[in-house]
Length: 285
View (tube, rainbow, N blue to C red):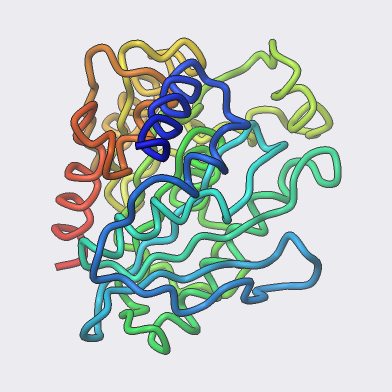
């Protein structure tokens, strides 16, 4: 009973965007069954922030792969707080890789994207050792992580420079991500991107193209952190370029709810998990 009471309080705090509670929520939230963590703190590069965890279905191999990139304004976050997301996606049949990456102020654009590209390269090289099919990868991200995911999906240079075969990336999913946010009018974006020599090259919308992997963009209509311009602008740009993009918007769902809805206790708040996995199964079929 006390555990349930604590979890209820943490869910309320997180819904109010009190993100320091995420680690405690992750520790208390019940996990999906039929999942095993097959790697913890696996290095994909040098330094303590270039580590990743792997969650896999308990049975079988040849599963499609999801690389899940968490958010945190490019300045905070830990893979250790997202075990609930790794378990949720693995229980749906995906080998799920969750990397840490370097954060502001230790690194600025494009360093955090380059780290995520290196994590995808690790997935392409090693997913088979964990029951995954490295030729069927979907990149998923929330908030700042959705930005990173869309940059990987749309700007070909990051994955190419990391040595990733573009054909292995079957799709990209952005959950409540910023994709078109010039000028930099908040501290987080000024800190992360303000030193970039060409500001347009920091924007996912700039790289819309017809041959990009199919995209799915999710957004909650109560999101006061990332506004609707981002979803609308990227959707319009991709369609104008001849690319494939789908969108889903959730009434009454805020910036944090949409991600917490991956967890077992909060799946009734938004169909985030169902929409991601339906899309990911289709594009990896």
